[in-house]
Length: 253
Ligand SMILES: *[C@@H]1O[C@H](CO)[C@@H](O)[C@H](O)[C@H]1NC(C)=O
Image 1 (cartoon, protein in one colour):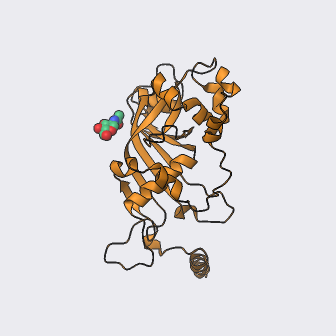
Image 2: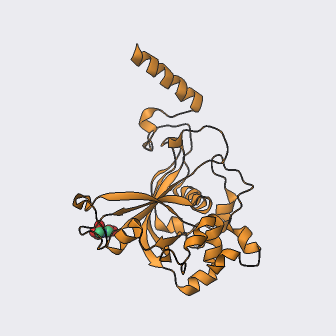
Image 3: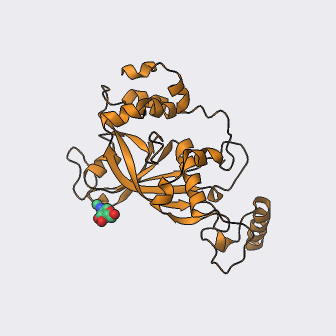
């Protein structure tokens, strides 16, 4: 009885929300399968991913704990080698490269793990801006595998990095490099691999996006598409800051 009820509700959810059959939720169909949707190409998926990088600003940094605890730290020994994913800010502040910019706080676990030799990934997902309900499993998300590299003072100036970053994160003004509270520095995640889940496997590409596809996305392509539930107007992103001419007060920190 219970089973029947849940089956019935699954069937009605499937038709109400247009869900795929369960075996297509997380895999692409094989070539021979006929399917009703045309799946975006790998390059179209790369364009979506680059637009998500442009419009989102918070993700998860995943690193691995080193064998030896950081010198200043008390921690359980058995976390050696365990992965930890922690929320962090990023900004698309070197937009011609697709390498996200991060304000790295020296004492934060993610950056201490990297200093101790860990690899790092940034995972992000698209959050629709309208109020329509969508299955979160139907929405694009991806992970950028890469390494951290310091921005030179020239990179910071040339790309107006502080204005860009504060355009995404007003509060980050409090921990810009040179502040009196935390040691911080500008880094870029140099993207080396991209793993993409565009949504349900019967209508979205799931798999690796070659680096050339990620890097070859043009600004025009990023501007030309809309993501599910995206509101085109009222983003209020960093270009508004750049347009203001005068540096905001927060630069004084
Ligand atoms: C980092 O990843 C590389 C492969 O890209 C691997 O050879 C290396 O062992 C990894 N480092 C750590 C500390 O896990």
